[in-house]
Each structure stands twice: as C-alpha cells, then as structure tokens.
Image 1 (cartoon, rainbow, N blue to C red):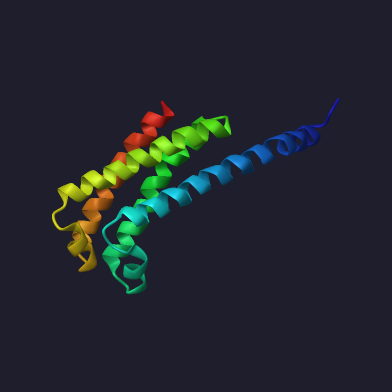
Image 2: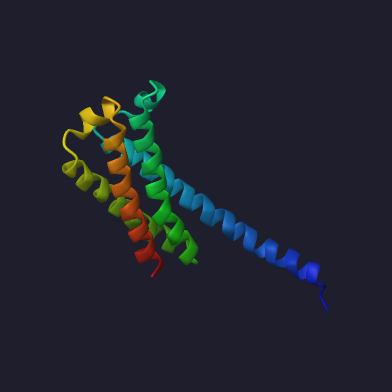
Amino acid sequence: MESTFGSILTALGTGLPVLLVQLAVTLALLAVGVAVYTRITPFDERRLVAEGNAAGGLTLAGSIVALAIPLAATLATSTFVLDILLWGVVALILQLVAFAVATLLIRDLRGQIESGNVASATALVGVQLGVAVINAAAMAG
C-alpha cells in the first residue's frame, strides 16, 4: 500500500507537467493578446508609460488585466491544451472588439490618453474590465 506522501508525489509528477504546459499556453496567449492590443491602439502605450503618462499606464495595465481575466476562466475550466487555445483566442477577440467599441464611445480617445486624461483612461478600463468579467463568466459556463 502506497503511503499518502507517495501518492501525493505521484499526483504531483503526473499533474505538474500538464499544469506547466497549460500555464505556458495561457501566458503565450496573453502575450499575443497584449501585442495585438498595443498594435491596434491609436497611441503608443510604452512611450506614454516611459514618459510618466498616468493615463497611458492605466490603460495598458487595465488592458492586460482585462485580457487575462477571460483567459484565466478558460484555463480554469479547460482540461485540454487545444480547448485552452481555441477558447483563449475567442476570449482575446471578444476583448479586442470591446476595446474597439469603447474607442467609439470615448470621444478623441487618443488625444485624451496622450494628454494624460486619467478620467478617460478609467472609463476605458472600466468598459474593458466589465466586458472581461462577463466574458469570463460566459467562458466558465
């Protein structure tokens, strides 16, 4: 009869590689999502952050979190890497569409963010996080 400690080590040896692969895939999806997001935005977040623009930093940080929330739900509810990949891509697309819609709702978003308007950045982040939470709930079923 195997000891409790032995069964724990066996489970760890079996589960850890799966966990690491799923985590790596999800982090790669997040990196791709952030890269696409920074390409489609009308402003340069990295430059704004380097210049100390709080609105730019807020929008970048909020976008990263908003992209991560539905990816986390996908990771938590999926058992296969392909499932994580497919639903992760869907989640990222929905979040990027939410950003596009938000840019239509916030007048002169580029000018607002580049001038450091934290109120506009906060409104953008609010839309993105709201959609992210709903998106995650839908992904979790």
